[in-house]
Image (cartoon, rainbow, N blue to C red; front, side):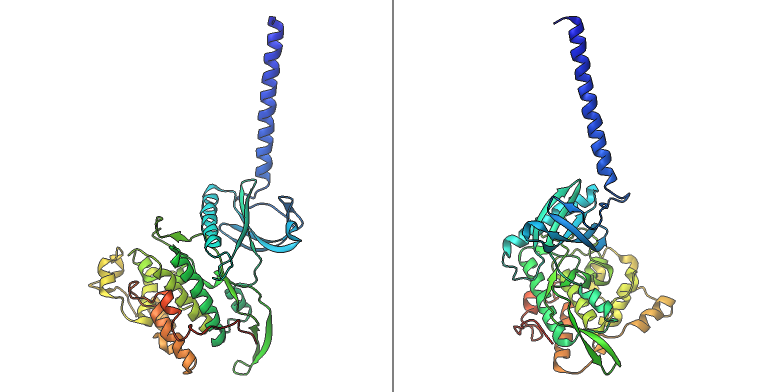
Length: 378
């Protein structure tokens, strides 16, 4: 091969490399143009992902990304929920962990008998991990909010409580802790309702027709053998052992359920605070002093003085807690048997010591929950 031919061949080779690099650069830029500055996928109604999922509407948004309603054209155009994770490394890694949990749930409960949301599929879309689920309805919190925070009737609370306890007990049996239980993560399968006149409040209230629920959001679920982060749970549903940094396990979920059931019953949050010491002061107003063992072994000694919570009841925060909180049984709305049964269960769920807090397998045998209820209808 002559020198001229060799130079020509070499030039052609360089041109090919430059073309490939240019194409890769353009594709990468195209991917960036699909995302907002904070990593959300840019989409609009009518967009189709994977030649299959047609986006209809946005259902919700969180730190992880967004959830959209789609039509699944590979399943006859039925509705599904699609969770689109942000195109950022830490959220992608968290999504992979969530998928692992969801696959375990599907494997252990293929017939969906334990009230956990079912993952249908997952895929990667230009850097966004996407997970498809059965399409559900309003969360128990959103329904409560739309109903002007009027409490759920006791019979409806019983049915929801049974399902929630069964779902989380199933997780515990499979060596999982949910770690982020709250009314927002418990969704109705169908949130159709009837309007009922409330003579006491002198207004119409919404009464949900079907209290069948699903537990969702396993993004923070942790296997027993995995690393346990020091800080878990949304503030209002956070157990005392987490605040005191004593370590945590399955019982922290039980505490969260106790807080959730109280919220269904009263229509408001039991611990409405954003401060650790104030949170502990609220607990003491509602349930009595924090046990000495927990104080002595806590890594948060700054909250205590001479073995007692360092709290000034005459301060602005002290007056707030005193006005806001009272002993648990003082919140009873009726002295009917079912109401007392519920509060007995709440007392067992909200015990300070994780080791003596009721297990969910035992809770399901309590009088409040042991009846085999069909879905509660009007």
